Amino acid sequence: MRARGRLFDVRLIIGILVVAALLAVSLFTGAYDIFGGDGAIDMFAITRVPRTIALVLAGGAMAMAGLVMQLLTQNRFVEPTTTGTTEWAGLGLITVMVLFPGASIVARMGGAIIAAFVGTMIFFLFLRRVSLRSSLIVPIIGIMLGAVVGSVTTFVALQTDMLQSLGVWFAGSFTSVMRGQYEFLWLVALVGIAIFIVADRFTVAGLGEEIATNVGLDYNRIILLGTGLIAVATGVVTVVVGNLPFVGLIVPNIVSLVRGDDLRSNLPWVCLLGIALVTVCDLVGRTIIAPFEVPVSLILGIVGSVVFVALLFRQRRRG
Image 1 (tube, rainbow, N blue to C red):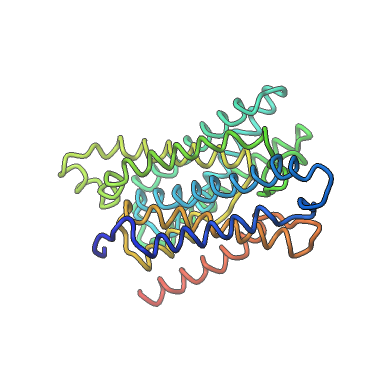
Image 2: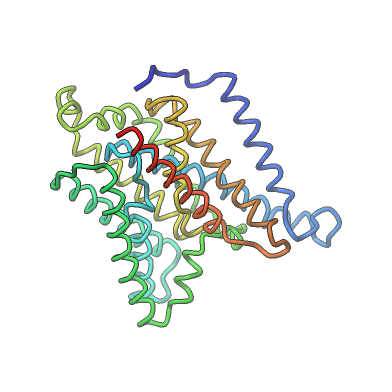
């Protein structure tokens, strides 16, 4: 672990300005002409502003959720995508829709959050009971578990004629984000605040149960708290936006390589880089085949898979 870095410095201010510039580009990028079109101001307020806010909230939340998960599991290769948390959220979502066809978005979100919490706890309990010789086995197990849960979700959707709806939910696109449909994403801002408040406890818990207990920390309570925050972030983002793969893997690893492992001083950087990554991928998706759009999850999947393989090779070189 490197020395604790300052929370705010000149480089962070520069990073904030760069991200602000990216968000400004996002506001003025799209097929509709907001300068000369009919109802341009209304279109700007209804679609562009909510979409940009959603980019900020979703990108920052998923990046911070990945960082917390990596600390609690003491493994740099885990995040909601590689541990099955996203797939569990999808299972909860489809279950609510099958049992209560007219369920509100709050009910869907609640089902996704509960299922994500249960699935993440199962993963954590497995890690505590099984001794693994290699850290590379952990994400493999998580991906396998996610594949099993995802297949169950797909089977349920197929049997209930909801396969198309499931595909839309997990497309991972900001195309449908507009005023009146994204406001629940503000819940993940509360998750970010909570993570910042208990950042030091998560850092100590990341050193292991024995050390955490020796300094007077209730390790199991911190694990439950971290799991709950991860579940809320994943469930809300999954229902409102869809699947955003590898954000929680790419961002914390890059920040950790540059700045070390202090959670509190890294959080602003993780949040900024998460926003920047999702915004850049969304801009690429909006412009690569304009006026049509490529789902941001596709761009993130390509970038994330390359980074994931690079991290694996780096781990192998270090033995």
